[in-house]
Image (cartoon, rainbow, N blue to C red):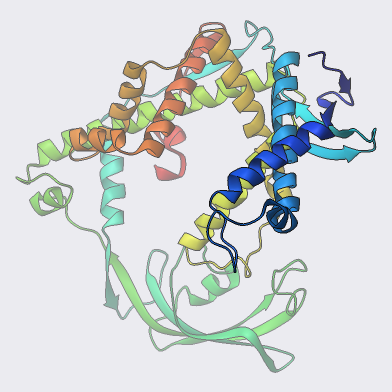
Amino acid sequence: MAVNVETLGALERRVSMSLPVAEVDRQVEERLKKLARTAKMPGFRPGRVPLKLLAQHYGPQVRNEVIGDAVQKAFGEMVREARLRVAGLPRIEKKDGAADCLEFSATFEVFPEVKVGDLSGVTIERPVCAVDDAAVEKTIQILRRQRVRYEPVTRAAADGDRVTIDFEGRIDGQPFDGGAMKGFVTILGEKRLLPEFEAAARGLAPGESRAFEVRFPDDYHGREVAGKTAQYSLRMVQVEAPVLPEVNAEFARALGVADGDLARMRAEVRANVEREVKKRIALRVKQQALEALLERTPLELPRALVAMELQRLLEAAAADLKARGIKLENLPLDPKAFEAAARRRAALGLILAEVARAENLRPKPADVRAQIEAEAESYENPAEVVKWFYTQPQRLAEMESLALEANVVAWVLARANVTDKAVSFDELMGADA
């Protein structure tokens, strides 16, 4: 079949299709006859409904199904004949034609040609970070803070204390929505409150009060108070000081060391930190490799592909908000905020798939197994976690994608200029250190 493909844009194409009316009529009659064998209608025994009556009731529906199937088949044949890689669904439109034919056009997008540029000029910095005794002790201190408890004190509040406060605000002598609260609990120094609130609470002992002013920014999310100055009174209800657990056998057992041996605990902490450092180094290298691929591979992206990625991101964000108990009507999602990420995901997906195909980098079962074992080694029973992955098709597919990415990253590193760069433990771990 000769296929005439019109080029409407960089990726947009259009083909025309013609269906003989006689062939459509023949298929409609065949389907109605098949339907007549089992059709039931009031006043007739099953399989005895006259064909003419069936045509009156079901003819239009059957005709639409026949035309839809025929158009889909003709489009598929044209695409295969022209060797087109269609991105997204085609837009089918009926056209005026001869009386003995039904004419249609299909407008669609094709995938772009992916050509990765020269990577030899790319420099990728690979962090180098040794896990020393200081890093282990710093991690132990973080673990202590994660298990902090608070005890009431009668002294003035300071940073690090958990405080319970009552406050009331007025603007021009009048209370306003959200301006008052009783029993509000926060930790001083964590900047969860406006700076004026923290400054007012700091230095107050239980039972003491303080007056202060707050000028709300012009772009404050509460429109009714934006740009205005409020007078507040704050009363300290309770001050609780943090008490960190001692580094002893009980603490070690809390971390999963059954016999409470501190040397074993530190060894396990070191092993966990080394695994985390290794992961973060690999992540930084991977991010640079993927950015290099994006920079060296200019692409015209199919709108349909970007729209699909955008929908996935919106659904994931909505699910995350729901899991945190936030209603979408209270925090509506703006699709524009996700467009750049959707375009990046679409481009990376095309590039990774093409590099994997062209360079034969599809992950082997051993590659996937290595990814799963690396993911499982931080759990108490790695063998059980490995088994779990192989019984979860969705999770297994995620590991396969990670294995493919790892193969492509290795391919990039073999072509780029990779230099080692010493980084401190704090720099690598960031806010977690």
